[in-house]
Image (cartoon, one colour):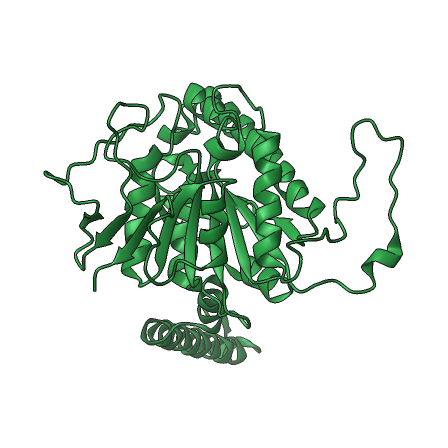
Length: 377
């Protein structure tokens, strides 16, 4: 409303009109800019999105030789709550050192666990031993939980979701404490063998799921660790899920995702049995399956030895929230479809070191005990 006196506009009224028109033009201009910006965003990814995509699926400077899965049952006493099988873990760490560090098979290399040990009064480090370190091959280690984490997850129902329930939230915390404890001990065992190992938690690295399938998994930290000469050590973990709140992300699923994007030469699953059997190995007449062929559609069949009905019977322990051997074979089949050979073999044996060294890339020797899973092509 313009105030007037004797038919003459009050001083300042015209300038108010001008300011109003300018404000309208400015608002219209800003609206057009915003609309154009939205259209450009729909046509092409923003630099932030592109940067995120690059960081989630990075390329490696040095090719990845192998991804190793340390089965929980192979490195822990699975029927004893949170008890490590120290003998097996030490033997596995020694074998990994022998295949990762050239020339170290007959001699020890300087250890990297400088933390205080039980029964020791202090910490002693001879710096002269670290003038030059032997270069290690590019490996990733992923371990299962075994007797760590599964009890906490199954008792609280973390794998079923429902973070709004106090018992699930408490179980989520308890599960992560348990699996992180095991991860530290695995890293220390490898470090004592002179392997430059770094523990990486999937939860802390931002991994999450949607309906138990991986929704987000930033691999930039894994890639940077590899390119810097470290050995990333990941583990099965409790993670957030977009649909059910939370779940358990198994080590087998983690390995499949790593293999899809980082393309190792081969993958080795170290277990507490010789490989995949046609039935639980504790049953009489159980047959070790030496070679499994994966077809283009993802289905698989036993090549050696020939089976009459090609039927394989699977079981999982009552407290195992990750699916047991069935999940292992399913994930291994997906990896094999990528043209990456997968070997399932008993840990801490002469057969496991042959698989870890990569000598099985051709024909499978008759005297090797284990299961090779390959793409039929």
